[in-house]
Image 1 (cartoon, rainbow, N blue to C red):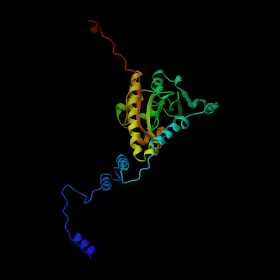
Image 2 (spheres, helix red, strand yellow):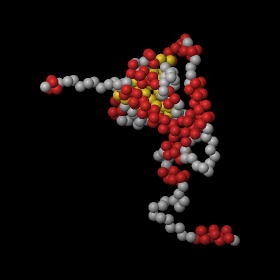
Image 3 (cartoon, rainbow, N blue to C red):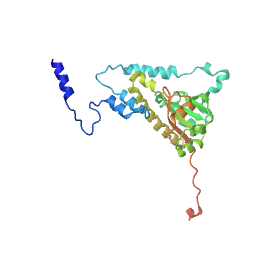
Length: 264
């Protein structure tokens, strides 16, 4: 009878919510559904909600020692190539830094053998569009690995809506591409690993811009592009590997000619 009485009282009660409230019991889930519709899906918000830690859920993250073992395995075994990989017809898949243009080789050197920045290439891959080929910088190796051929940076320009950024891609033969690989960080951190990948990508982008400027190049970061088109051109699936930033490497600006008035 007590339960029946409570139910009847609840059904008869007139609920007057605040004028600013659209849900009687707002929650994270309902808030997400209210803001996201099939016509406007915000994937970033979904990742943000899924990555929130709570003391009321099991914590299955890897320990620091376990993650260190994974990193060591990746940099010493997984990404290493054998001499047998480069014999015969396979020789052209490896491009040593020594065969690259001076400024590009200077930018990539810190990621090569014994480079202090090689371990930044875990959450993200550093891709290089050099002429008509798309390469990947091998962590701790003084070489690029040729992945496939592309019609040069001009092929990327058509997938960039901003006219100035597209013009920068058409004005150079060399573009660095930061490709996020979130599953590597999510292996140890679950959904929260996606956040760490984004943080590492920001650090890597800042480092790459600084290295390019030190090499007397003019880097122009391009962050807005048609993702599906760029991922297709780079052979990324858009999920396990996805392009995050394009960095055209423009040559130094021509010095202004000195006029006779300046001598006066």
